[in-house]
Length: 251
Image 1 (cartoon, helix red, strand yellow):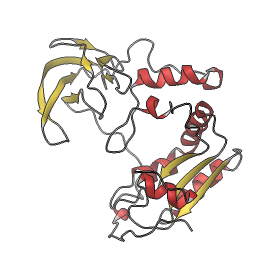
Image 2 (image 1 turned 90 degrees about the horizontal axis):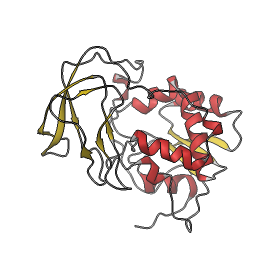
Image 3 (image 1 turned 180 degrees about the vertical axis):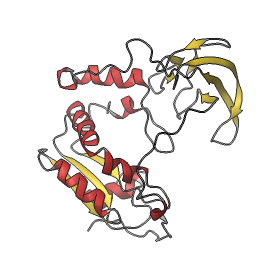
């Protein structure tokens, strides 16, 4: 059984974008970069009006363990630091960045590293400094997710590719176009967590993604791809874990 109890079946309308390849958007004339991008401690700005920044440069530093730094998405000039509309529905502090058109990286950033040579602590430090956060509503810092309590061992890593929401196809396209990179990242996370079993969970309405990910995972020991029943909210944390393992996550 690859589902939970209950759920609904909305009109998904995924065919509007599921067959279209990912495209890079052109650089806008202005970028509003909010400092608060997760539910952890708000980061502290380290730039001011008139600051020239490079792509990848920290513009707001983390202020605690459950916090994440914010980086400049491109090179340019900080025109102002003010309150701007935020997705949560209120105005929040942000930097107004005007790109210079060069998209120039800060020296030392965007450098390839041999992940296999790094120990788990080094990997978590890099992830923390990079400001990686989850893609869910809380945007929880990734380095925190990779640091479970010592008395709570992890025995399974789940990659949530269910994407059960109507219209959304971003994960679908990523699995089709970047399957190798996804599994490489999963293998790195599994090593950091000391996990030997990894499941990629995908709803059955994405058969091409299931096929692509299974082909990519074929030679990876401990990896499997599970095709889940199509029902909302299959991709919610508790429902997904129950569907795959029959385990109930405490409230």
